[in-house]
Image (cartoon, rainbow, N blue to C red; front, side, top):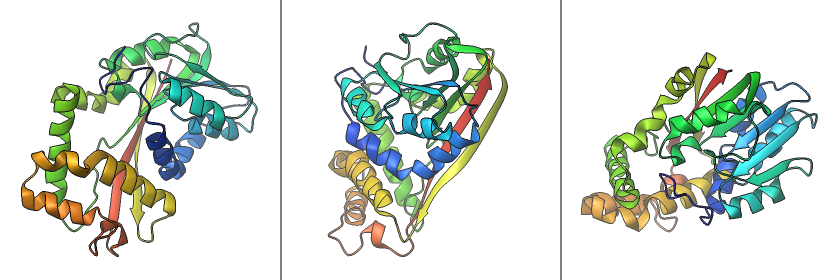
Length: 274
């Protein structure tokens, strides 16, 4: 099955997942620890990617619980098995057809995962069925609020963000409605019949001096992976030239070496109880 963003069992973006998890580790760990999962809990990481969150849940419960990772991609499952603790289990599976019986888990964690589905609300319903009575589902998404990359040039940021949206619509054949539907995290939980729905948004904030993990993520995943040459046809020539200079480590104006570099990315987490 091909998802909204082209996901298939054969697709592999292992390195991007590892870089993001290293970059956002403090904020993701804080969100996991705040759940205060009791010893003996059974947790599913749906869309586990390269397995870092599986390990963090295991550590948060001090090893006294069961954590299962699930991902659609063969390469991601292989990577997660090398990252997750030996006691954890990692399986290959589709979020809309998970290989588990209903009521198997105390908590389901699905962060930066539902936006890959063409019908994310259906994903919430299916994953909620996996919860025991009183169990919780956590759905989360980064960048519900537009990211800030160039604190000194909001106009260029807007040009870049607009170009990215057009590129994604053309590449994946999705509508603006489909790509922004993930903003309804809390709404999905309410409509699924969950109660005590709570939402928290925190900012992933980075300024100089940047840690190595921060610079690697911003350079490789954003400047080169998300932007780069593929945005040329969607931007005015002078704006693309400016963007290229700011994103090049060989240029004297390289953004990540500027003393006034200031990056913001939101991380929104919504929790509902069955």
